[in-house]
Amino acid sequence: MIDVHCHILPGVDDGPSNFEESIEMCRIAASDGIKKIIATPHGNPCVYDSGTARIIELTERLNVLLSGSGIPLSIQAGCEVFAAPDLVARLKNSEVLTLDAKGRYVLVEFPVETMPPNWDLFLMSLKGAGYCPVMAHPERNVWFLNRPEALYDAVEKGIMLVQITGVSITGELGPMIKAFSSYLLERNLAHVVASDGHSVTFRPPVLSAARRAAAEIIGDERAEPLFTGNAEAIAQGLPLTPPHPVELKPAAKKRWLQRILPQR
Image (cartoon, rainbow, N blue to C red; front, side, top):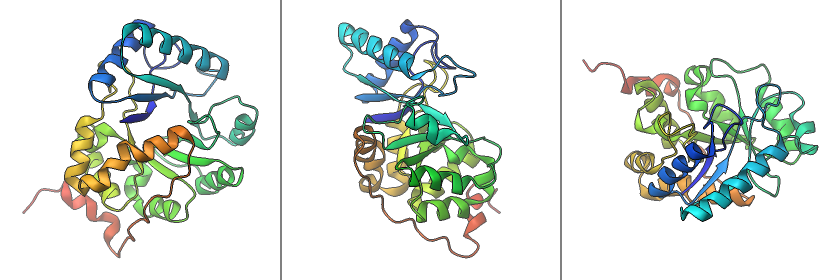
């Protein structure tokens, strides 16, 4: 498996504070069947010491330590960027990193409570500039919980891919997020699953449980690419053509909520 969203680098954001913690996270990931992690510290230099040069330096140092420790895992430099009007310029100037060395996939984070006006036009501007936005964990966004059709429209138009979090699928973030994650999986509105790991204890970098849970929801054949093939394409910067999303029928907007309501 490949984890395309993980805060594995030490001392750059709200992830591990030192290399010892990073190594232990890597050990956990490798034991869980993960072979590669894209390091995605928050790309906000106003808040974190996460400039491009520092991310690349720490990634190289961590790979050296992993090689010396005999842990069968590789780290690739990347970034999780917050949606901002100057993002295209920052990408062009290499102030923030894409998920791949070819400069194709951009992991974009939005607020968790709402979505800014014209967020879809913002993603279209990224697309028009030659990038492929990957929206980070929209299943945890309250705005999308109430407007799943907006997520469908964006995916159907091809302006973004969707990354959901492993523990969202397994239910560790609560029944509502679990139900919504299942809803997205069933409708081909999720394209890659990642850990969004932050530490050994807080959301550790594991995916095998989510892989099993996803297979129970949509079957092995549909679940497998979310952890392997699609993730590999993103890591290598290769074209990715996901299956067409399943159209939302009338009254489907709220139907997923029935899964968590008490049965009468």
